Image 1 (spheres, rainbow, N blue to C red):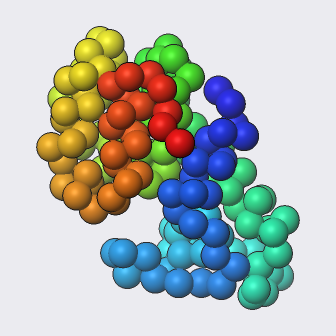
Image 2: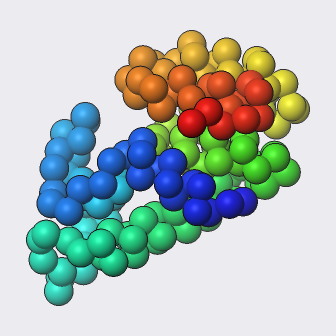
Length: 148
């Protein structure tokens, strides 16, 4: 997978913040969608975060996302690169627990029924909550091409 593209997509979709803020669910967050409740910062770090610290958090959060996907949806690595980025982006955004709730959508992805998977994504509450991110990811799931 092209990690440079995934990182750029996550930076666009999540935003980049050097100070803590509350996300749409009221969870303390910083960096590129880094959940401070789940993983607090090292005690030696202070705000504002440096670009290097934000990059370090993002790298670790992507690694955690991949590990969760590998543990729970081992088949995701068999998808083409664009659809792998869709699954990784959704998992990064939702967390593995909520992503696993997309049972029919994930089953459609696994069997290569990408239009069905995209329709399942569009029918979810998530689709209405994340705006253009969801529009892009659904299009990419259906077509295999990530819109800009």
